[in-house]
Amino acid sequence: MNQAIWTTSEGDKKVEVTFHVGDTVRVHYKLIEHEKVSGKTKREVKEETHERTQVFEGIVIGIKGSGPNCMVTVRRIGAAAVGIERIFPLQSPWIKKMEVKKTGSVRRAKLYYLRGKTGRDATRIDEAEPAQVKTP
Image (cartoon, rainbow, N blue to C red; front, top):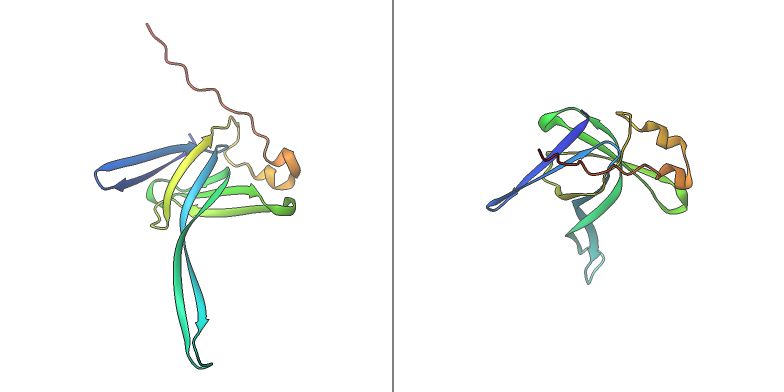
């Protein structure tokens, strides 16, 4: 089965998130910005760094590798109907949190055909029904 498991351990608790190709996920990742700030004179230039968390929400269109070497490709539609893809390594210290917004029902391991679609067709994936537990 084409799935990935993202794990993190913050303090005493361990968090595991399992997702598949076709799921809509939100990836919270740490971003470091460097900014040059001029001082009182022209020669006096300081460099400041800021850390912030940015959210990337999109559809998982591919999973490569397995275990700790797993890479996940997430695609979203940005402004002016431009497709944005980003590849995330799962075992990265930059990823702070991952959450699954919707589970998709697809029959392909790679959803590269979404690259050719525009507008609503690029984000339209059937939603999977939750698994029913059989009681004897």
